[in-house]
View 1 (cartoon, rainbow, N blue to C red):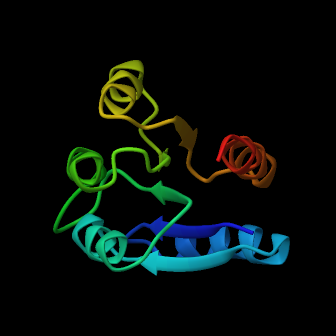
View 2: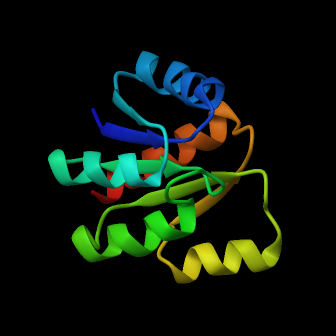
View 3: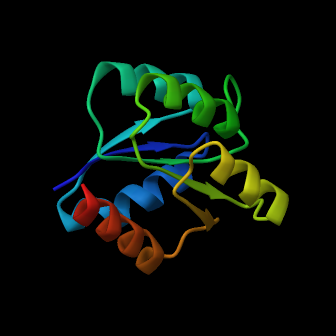
Amino acid sequence: MANILIIDDSGLIRGKMAGILRPLGHTIVQAVHGKDGLEKVGAESFDCVFTDLLMPELDGFGFLEEVKKVQPGLPVVVVSADIQQATRDRCQALGAIAILPKPPKPEDIQQILSTIVQAG
């Protein structure tokens, strides 16, 4: 199955997403902010990243910008309470493959992940 990185400063959200993905057989690694996430991306290989936008140290926009430099093909899904069109457009311009509203629905996470795994 997939090796997935979840980046969010909320332990509750990270736990909820891990609780959806682990039972499906995926390996989950968690990061508490974008800088932590970049370090983990540099240390191991991931099939997909789910990231929040509003975080300390390095926000989701900064993560998207930086991860493109080190792993341009890595699929990144943004999970955020801010789903305004301008935010969506900026995320897509930075390379996000999808934007999910927070809290994410299990079926939405599973659908996006299924698409990523099939494409990979």
